[in-house]
Length: 239
Length: 248
Image (cartoon, rainbow over all chains, first blue to last red):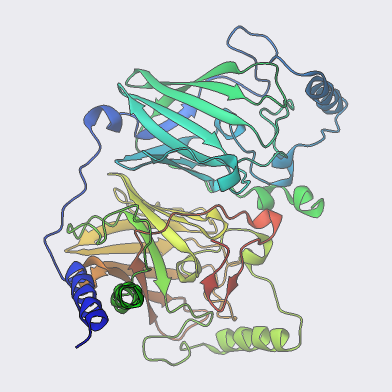
């Protein structure tokens, strides 16, 4: 028997052994302080116009400021522009977090998942993943989210966004360079605070922060079936 | 030199063959354990339909036991498609595909379990099923695309009972349809040592079928997959070809 054949047989044996039935190691459940994030949450207050944590407009660059002001004026005139959600396309991030429909957050060791009633969107946060560069990501509506736990807070970084969504309903624009960093902190067991840092050097002169709060709803809360294209036939016709 | 290069190639080939024989993708990143949890009640993770077929076969391989009306509607849809003018179902409009049809999609799904709910998040059009584990159907069920689903464990089998499914959804992609009386019972359990699950679905609708009938789908455990974004409303950038999702 030749040496290559022996090596091949040995490797085949190893491959078969790796697939043989064996004792199965259970993945550990997420620790209790992380499991506190699991539940059904609802945004507190109305957040169609997002401001910084100091209550100001974001530090727009001039072209972005002009786009924002045009969007605000168009909405005031009753003819909003550039609002993908009106066409039943996903609102993107962070805007999906600014809706009143409840969100079920599930916590697993390697994945935290946001199951939104809104448009039945699901947003996956992969725990322990390194955040890929934009070159390695598709441009998606909800981007790609990588998370890590820091003393019971969930830190989520997201990028890989398309540039057709806006940051809020009013019309804060962004580019495909948008990088979001969220800190999800439980102020108490029923109060979730999401502090969001918005970094997009093509749109803003500096990174800026905004903050929203969610209240826990009873675990027995049930979602309605949210079908944007069915309740809003005009949006479908306008496609 | 030449011999050792040949050895490396042979070894790589053997590893690949070994993995293919076991049904695993070569050199894939695993996001979850290679086998699903040993707990039969833990269905959490990503699964992918095996043997996709746009025409759902009954377990005995025959067409469903149609009533006259069911048969007529089925034939109408087959003829319309043959004539190049297919009739549309809910999925054509980017509405949720409905129960049980969404379970027969050539895209992965991910199961989440909380004490209250079993959630099935489908890649296809981000359809999401909520199966209520702690209650029965309400006396008055409000019609929805996915219907009202309640679940309970019978031994190692998750039994899901669904009513109230919007008649704009179909049962398969060819033309088996249903009315407001549709009632499905799904029996989901792990098979093949946790490498797969089966869903045995009994379909009942006296307006369209003379008696209940059953089909069976199976799904492979896929620790190498994550659910991708699929937005029907922007049209399909990622259509399956020959039943296989491309551009992943």
